[in-house]
Length: 338
Image (tube, rainbow, N blue to C red; front, side):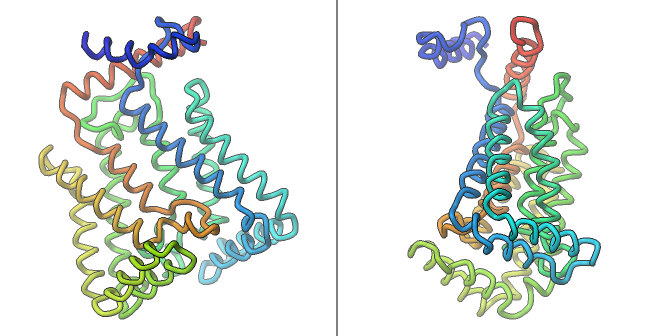
């Protein structure tokens, strides 16, 4: 612990040198805080993407309307209603959307506002999941692990809950369980990855050429290297689509149950989750963020971050990260840290 304290003081040296922090009020961010900062960065990326010229056109509203067909009327009608409002006032509405996402990212990054920002991110994510993603296509048969299902934005909400900065943390073998408890966190992981495994076997993914066509369609507007990758993956999917879907379902099932296994097997499962999420992100064309038309990085990147929150910790690491976050929370809530 003494060496960790010395390392923390060394990292803060340049900040103290310019008077930005006082030695007695700064602590090195714990593991959960670092993951929160990554989440904040992704929210900021969303906000930047929302400022693209395309988002201020009526094309953005047409993108939202495309998520309504096939959904029940109770879901589709509000989507069409909100899209019409956006189409009538594209500049004002999109500017508001972009600023909200930037504010959420900055709020999560600023320690005193992180709880407010994380709470706001859950509300915003649920609204966008409905009105912007049509519930990720889970009700209209279009959902697939390689097209962003069950909706990238709902994973933002899940991450906000799992990374919630509770003052009194529960004992858990991974960061994701420190607020909700390990069993609840495992159940949420199992539901998410289990649902992805189920979706991999649905016709939207398993039908001949369905997977290949989905991945090849991501190549449009991409840089040459990424377009080539998606086209090759798409061609392979066209030839072996049903088999690939079954293999993907098996892999996703293994990932889903991995967090319930002993630590060595759980770590192997998390590595498999990260590799699988990276494959999904590549198949998604990195969410279209390089095409000047992507609104977010899609589900692949978020699944990687989610997997990191479930990385099994050794006792020493778990103890040190818990003490670091607890000390920071105590200082924040004391009169000096207010």
